[in-house]
Length: 190
Image 1 (cartoon, rainbow, N blue to C red):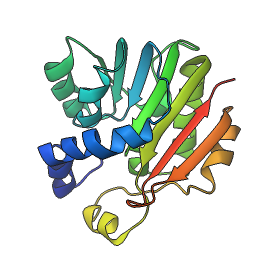
Image 2: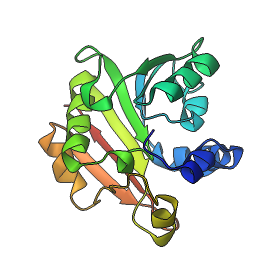
Image 3: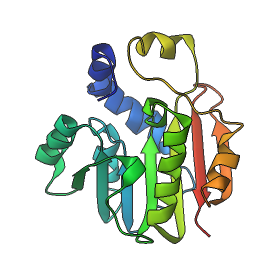
C-alpha cells in the first residue's frame, strides 16, 4: 500500500471511520444516486466500504494492495466482492455498473497519467447514465506531514473537469469543501 506507517494507522482507525461516516461520505455523495451495482476503487482499510455496503444492493471493491484486499475479503467478503487489482486496469466488463466511486485515494496514484487511466477505466465499466463520483484531499501542511515518505499526487480541482471530459465523461463538476478544503467530484457517462 502506498502509505507510510503513520498514514496506515490513521486510515485504519475508528477516528477515521467516524470522519468518513460523519463528514466525507455524506458530502461526497450529496445528491448522487448510486444505483444498484457499484464499484469502489481504492477502498484501503474499508472505512467507506462499511457504509457503502448498506447503501447499495451490490458492491465490488477494487484494492491494489494484496494484503489489504485479503483483509477486506476476510471482513466483508460475504457481502462485498473484493478484487485485488489495479484500478487503472480493472478486471471488469464494459458498460456494466451504475456507479464507480473513489474516496481520498486519487492522491495516492503516483502520476497524472495513471489517474487519467483510472478515469478512463471508470468510464469504460459504467453503463450509459452511470456516475463517477468521489472525493480527495487538497494540498496542505497537514497533508504534507502525513505523507512524508509515501506517495502524494493531489489532483488540481481546476484541471479535473477537463481531464474527466477527456476520459469521455459529461457533466463534470468539482466542488471544494468550504471548511476542510477537500474536493469532491462527479461526472456522468452519457
